[in-house]
Length: 241
Image (cartoon, rainbow, N blue to C red; front, side, top):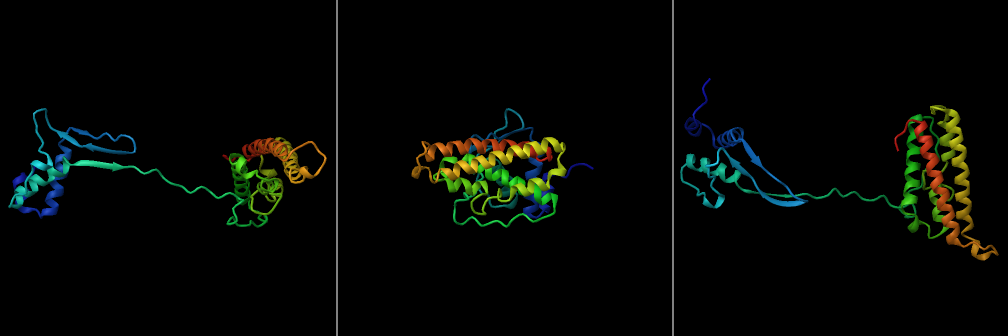
């Protein structure tokens, strides 16, 4: 049917409903809407225009009138021409504590027969190795810290008992031969990284020419290769890492 005249709406509708009706009607009939945020915090006016000659009154030019009709008619314009202030806060996510933190809990040995749980344990082990490499300078103040991440010292890392997990997952591989080769390489480099990190603890008291720093650099190179072959096995298992 024909549209209801604004005058009739003003006289009949409750104030709150009337405000919403006028507000959305104005939005639907307005062809342009400009809003341009800039950077993380901005103060940008909203501009509304029906044609080039329309002059929308600003908040300061509007006055509260005594009757309900004038008040509602002017109030919605005041709201629409008000300055909009947006403040965008970046999402803050707490970084996971390093395993060297005393608050890090011990992990139980893997004892599940679930493929899903085994893959999850493997994924968490990859994340521990990634954390080790990303924070190597901070962690490698001594060889035992590196060994903690490798799962050969203490039971805080998901690398603890990882060989058992990977052997359990072998039958899930797309190519069992390639998976087995990657597993063998993984275990070889893990053994070398563990050995270098362990030797760094005692080299100063031996006649060897190596230093703790040089051995820990060697261990880091082996950890890089450990991570490489973990990635190969993850692909064989259809995992996204």
